[in-house]
Length: 150
Image (tube, rainbow, N blue to C red; front, side):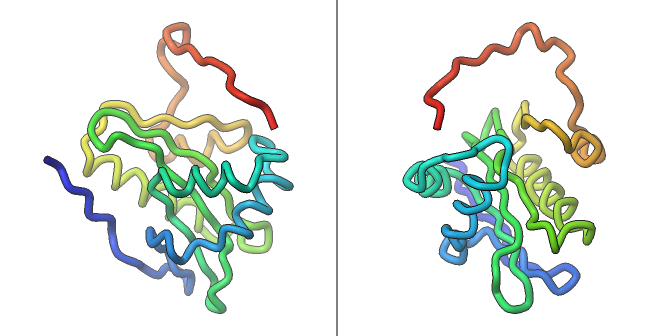
């Protein structure tokens, strides 16, 4: 049986990066996702809480301990991983935080030896391409089923 040990906290450019879910400021994550993101407008708080509970999450915190970034990976830790809800608050963009976050998740996916690591993005193709993400070679094979809308 494979037991996951997540990486410990680390600092980059005076920002704390942590996989510790107890540090996540759910109100800040909820505010961004429900009010500012293009992908989760009006998402209910209970859904955000459940999504955090059931995923591997990485929070980014400034020197005052305020959450300024977030991302989560949904994975079986063997075959598949999906990166979701990645964001950096406006005043903290342009400092390499999203690059550090994506690299941390890619390293984790590599440690799990997943066969497929996916994500969806409307506007950050350049960021993710730096880490090996590319358009699907056979997108006609991928299907989806719509769930509820918020």
